[in-house]
Length: 376
Image (cartoon, helix red, strand yellow):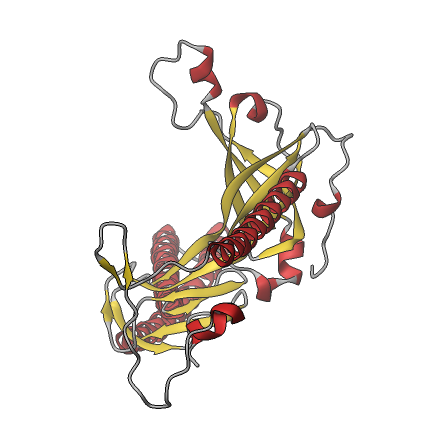
């Protein structure tokens, strides 16, 4: 028995046919005498079937409308904020720091991968410094030579001081003998001339010592300069953060200022939102805020307003009507506490969308959903 035979009423069941025999085509004659391959079922059966499907459809519509209405009511109730609290959409951002080369050169070592956490002072990469090291060795040799020149000049200065002291003693003795008549005035003049010559030579030796000292200082500065340049070719992370992009690879020759790694500063994370004039005019630097990310809807991150734009964004050139004034938007920056970021450095991400809530009235209590900080 096929499905149609099972669904017919018992009093109208089709006559039995032998098993395996072909099904005879049942034709019905319409009013105009034409054959109809699909004769109509009895009216009571069709009515019952139509009522059953209609009931199912109505029930499905009621369920769908009820679920949609409940979801809409729940969202409306959740999104409702008390007077004195405003909100704006935005994305979490962090300050990006480009770790770049100071001098042109070849990248010799790259010690980090994208996503690695970096500490302030950690070595990120090293440049090839063999040419600078050779220049440093030359500068150190020149420094030693300058030091020897200083030693020689000082020795000559001491020698001339001894000559001046001797000439002065001879002048004093000759002056004593001249007073007693035991020496001539000519000898006294010769002794005076010798003293003057020795003093002049001493002054020249003193000048050469000063010159040698300056040469020594210049050589020392040259050595220090090469040491600083070599140290600057060791690229380090200036702040705590995360390696965001690795731009260069080992062996590449980079120009001065060539970027090697871009990192994000995990201590400077913020969200920029835009508020209309009436709301932005009530915001102050330090206003309490909460940030709720789409990825973590159950966590309200504490934050503070750190910046308020002094000029509106997307401003028409000529503002004449109240409607246009209402469309003026001001950029507000909401910054997360650096200490909180440091305690959750592994969870810091940039680019995540979310909503920032600002409490314009400090007397207003935060809603319960904006007080949840589980997971922080």
